[in-house]
Image (cartoon, rainbow, N blue to C red; front, side):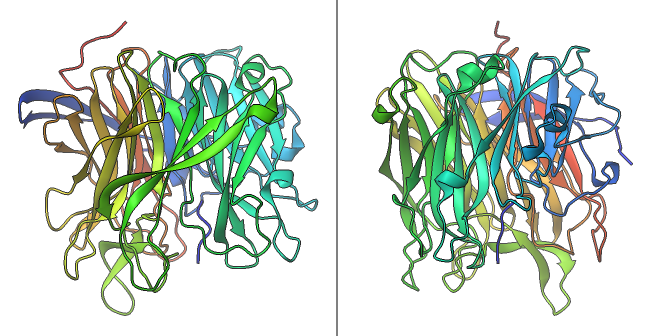
Length: 509
């Protein structure tokens, strides 16, 4: 959740055979219905659809509920989606009874466990907590399923503004690493329209949390440091921590890394940037004084963030829909183009280490605000460096936005994203290519929407692409769409879960 200014279970199978330069690849796309607003007692407009694939199920989160689905039959694990606070309520952990958004689902591939996390909304005591739940099994349908639950008090690390009010910990993103769970928060000023003034990154004691033990105190760093009482708009916000793909751990002692955008300077005229930010988090659980958090800018091909507006840099609303607005023109939704999109997908190939990240950029020229997808691959056994990058914008009309990227064990990359324009209802597409042979990306449809969102500007806030840990080949992606227009006070969004496997990726044990 970004603070700014009846279930159809028919399965759709699309057989697509796409020819990519240097490599012919076919894939079968299977999609099925995920959580829909009609299933929820109190659906929200801004739903943050995300999820992960595990050994036996796919688990999905939308604000503020979760559901899991059998990977083979697509049958839901629970008769209805579960309230997002369920693990903490079952364990009588009252600090986490009020989670209202920003939920994340991960599958910890190195431990074969599920992880749910989100921040609470403060009650009368005004305390912010980061709430984390870890399953005791990889099987969400098991009769012995239970959750180890934790709540980390955030107030001491968030800072306060000049009025003494704690900064709001927005848009937390979590990643799995061998020596910890790592999370980043945006610091937003509740007395200045929730303007972002900095970030906080924290390491959580994964080792003890996996066993249900008492974790060591979390270790956190801020930028700026110290956190200011009167912060100016922060331009490298929304940290995305590395999240391990596959079952090969990072090398022993390997630091965790985060990536964030570097928005254009606030000079009233600049619209481009040629930098992203790499953050190196070194944690020492034995001697925390040895822990560190450092920033290293990376030069990349010049880009303009999606929907960037020099007159109002906090607004990234420019994605058109067919629906007409009340004062002429088309309705628009948010590109969330001012930040990187999760995940920062990490894979250890042995011979090299690879990090993938993506975001929305402007690809239109002259007066066109058309958006496309920019992706980066970082490699290196020390400080990762830019190895290659590219844009996905094969036409001059369709807006592509809200991406999430991953790669299989054969170095095939796939990125899923939303699409829309003034004649195309918002839908879900993907592109794939090989990161070693570097053919041009091939695009394909995951699901076509048939309705527009007319009563809100929000369009999710993020999505997720993950790879099956069993065969290490099959991509799973979740995003939202509309079957009919959402108007007036109605809330009728849908989500779709799709999976596909590229023929060049062979079964992996």
